[in-house]
Image (cartoon, rainbow, N blue to C red):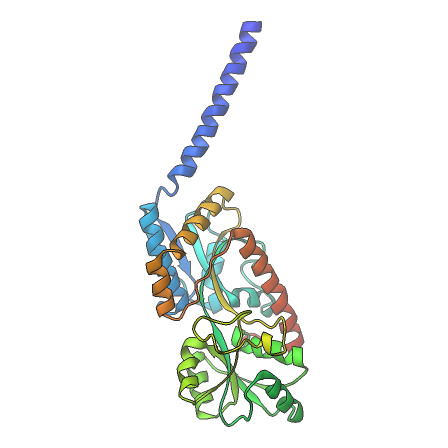
Length: 326
């Protein structure tokens, strides 16, 4: 009886060790096949540029192809919904951004739950934004804008790339903090919004720094402040809106990589570690900086907390502004 019990214990111990070794091997050999990186936007935009750059380097590290899959449509919901329903095995990545957090409260029905259906991997390089005004508007800083808006309620117009965009709700966030009311003029994209802002058809807007800074330098636009929490490396002499009397104000057109929610933690951590490694490579950093991207990365838990804070922040702004989806 003792011999049988001892043999059983030895067999159990061997089985446990084999399972543990198998787990280590499985983790060590991931990935065993190509990884699909879904971009819920058309080719050529910021999300596409960042995904392809990081994906190429990941492919070299993993010695597996990272297949870029552009799935535009339904304001990004098509690609995100596809990723949310994908197998949580580490072979699907999707790009999320600021609109991803806004849509949670802007739309009454989504094919996913932003806080529940994804495992955040890491924040990725993003384009900084700038609050700018047409020179005909006699303001040089946010406090002057607020004073003017209070003296002319509902008369100052501002452009955005569309209703519910960060550019729209960013101005609404400032209006809420300052207790002012301005008139929103939505456009179908950033390009026509900037065109009319330059022409003086609208007075104000939050615009990508890469698109607005050249016009600031020529005097065609007036820079009122950077909308990031801290100053940008691309224009260190331009103060943030927050430091000019509006602490806590931040509008970031952030981007970041997500996986389906039940993706194993060891795979999430592996993907995060390799993404951070890629973003620290000198040639990658130089490439992003040359294209006007601030280079960010974060731990999965840190990115998860950030997304949830963004969802709550924009939910409050959507409610107060009465913003509706296009």
